[in-house]
Image (cartoon, rainbow, N blue to C red; front, side):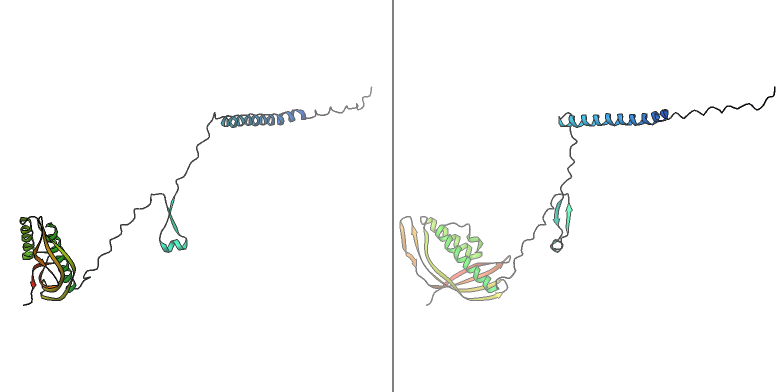
Length: 233
């Protein structure tokens, strides 16, 4: 028996790759991710609803301190430059008082003013018997004479002088030294004495008349230290 070539049978085709198995492997992660996203959405929705219902407080808003804006200077303010500070407003710088102008009066005017001040206090002390002010204008013999006159008026029955004063005009100022001066003035006034029992006309006088004043400067202030009436013979 002749053996010839036997017909060979074709080998079986290789198995087809299981594509379905590949699709399942790719779909499983997608399903997992989708489930996680769904759960996350549910959690966020629950938190939002809880916050609306007041179960979870919202975080407090952070409020930054308000800065006080103050201009650095007039020039910078005009240019729009400012300085921001969070500190309280600075304490204002104390303003120094305006100094007085020394020597506002001339020496002659200062002496004349001292005479007018003395004449005013002279009339006040003899018409009120109040001796608290005469020392501000008189020293020396002028002060002692006024205090003695007040004592005499009180002893006579609380008598007082009543004046009708019309004015005092300084006629001449003479300086002997820088602190010693003399003033001649015309005084125009009438006067009379009143006591508990009435007027004492024997002491009445009428003006005008001239008076000589002696002045001294003590501690930078001019005072009348003596005076006398000038009577024409």
